[in-house]
Length: 160
Image 1 (cartoon, rainbow, N blue to C red):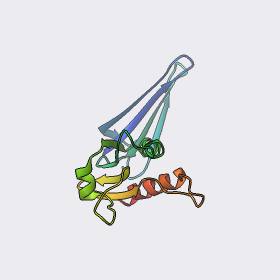
Image 2 (cartoon, rainbow, N blue to C red; image 1 turned 120 degrees about the vertical axis):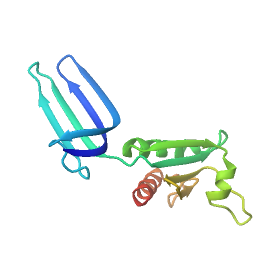
Image 3 (cartoon, helix red, strand yellow; image 1 turned 90 degrees about the vertical axis):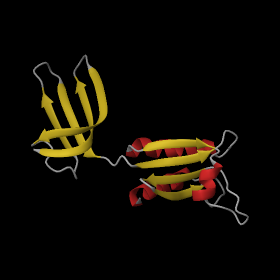
């Protein structure tokens, strides 16, 4: 019997019923999920025209995205949606800290005088802290580059 720490998404659907449950769990699946390193999907059709589908895939619960920002920060309107979107897409935690200058001084990007800017985005994996970007990348036209910021954050999570 295979044993894996995984995230399960369970969907039950029929003509009149549609409900979903997503939970992190320690599971025993037997022959359904033999290798925890690869995705597994199993479906069962029930006699009442409904179907149960179980998706099993490994997750790393130690990684998270950390955004240090402030209420007065105008760039937050670009950076926060990037962080929320990537966190939701990849299933990692997002922590938002308000004006945590102590953290920024210790782990953040500093200017020539030792000052820090807000916002800054980090990937934390256990005890390791990786700075991803400060403010938001700009296009050649000088406009916020949300696509580039998203790619940078996804790459940092993959490399962490």
